[in-house]
Image (cartoon, rainbow, N blue to C red):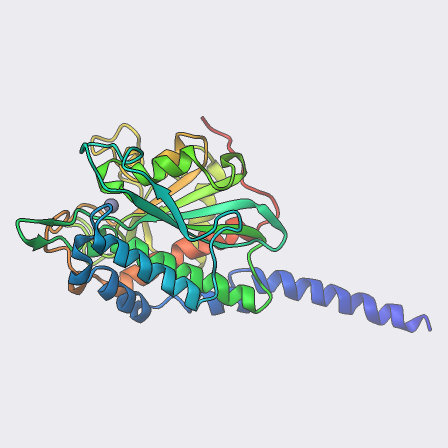
Length: 336
Ligand SMILES: [Zn+2]
């Protein structure tokens, strides 16, 4: 009967290893999810989210609400719900909470979708993008396909990718919050509200990966496979390394750190929603394609998006989030 233990030990080891290998970038679980993020699906979503019927998604407008209902409908199709402590996907913000650069904004909502971690559910990775834009001016619709339709639809594809893994028994060990914030264009108001009223304590928030404009190129970089990464080393040296490793082992973009400096004159570190996490000590990475000729113009339309670039950048964020969610140790804040 002793023979069986000789037999069982290697089998157990093999099973353990295959599980670990399965969750690595070369493993089948990762690849299946990674490959589910496609240019075609991003395009289908973006033509809706940045379509004329959304009227430029100004904060609190009917068009923005319609876009929000589309996002929720897509999560429901994927069988993804809101955080358990909430009664719906909506985190409501009153006009009072939305007092930014403009005096009176109508009430609006952040939209939160959630995949609970299998091993460490109380530790949360936030992936954020703002779903508002600047609305209409003089009868012209500002579609905001890149800003930030691109980040908005990337979140849908990332959620689908994690959900595919979860349904196959390879769900993320830590939880993932897909945070669609409102009021960004009026002064990062939705993310500020979330940071002041977090659904999960910020102390348990491992990182915020923020996506704001990843579907175009700027004059300096058109023709290159690149993305600007901002803030990834500001609070945690590990986060920058994890993002670089994710990139090297998957999409191999040129990671451009030109704006990765709080003293840069463009001040991009302060200009999108990640900043409301960073200022509260949560490590962040901000993914961005640069300022292009259609930035904040009615010509930021879905036909001008480079869907292959959008796919690769979304896949990079996915690979980084996958590692943050599944690695043994939570990343640490080692810088101030
Ligand atoms: Zn934006």
